[in-house]
Image 1: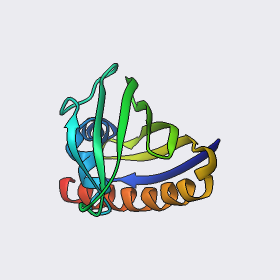
Image 2: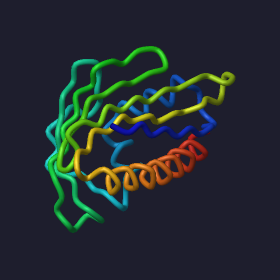
Image 3: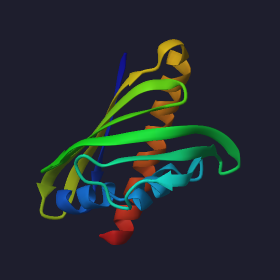
Image 4: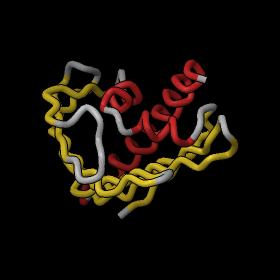
Length: 145
């Protein structure tokens, strides 16, 4: 098991950031262009209890695995999911949105990964993807602010 965490300050309210995070389009934006998701079987906006899956593609052209997500909890300032697919048996993902003032928040991604024998590769990927995700989040929220 590995625990990976990354935080960023976003120039939008915690409520606005959390509402964005509940949308499939936001996930598609923050992982692009490295990952694309196709054949999505999920609601466009997630809420507690929602389940979904989609086929991941590297750079939009190389097929990868089907990724599955179950939104366990969504409350004030938090979204918590259980995910799995491909080399990852368990990817418990907690997103938190801590208000700093009326127009900014601290956004934190935290994942607990059970990746079996694929450990190092999955952890390196997760760390690099978090750097990219947070860069994309900051770019998007600067435009929205």
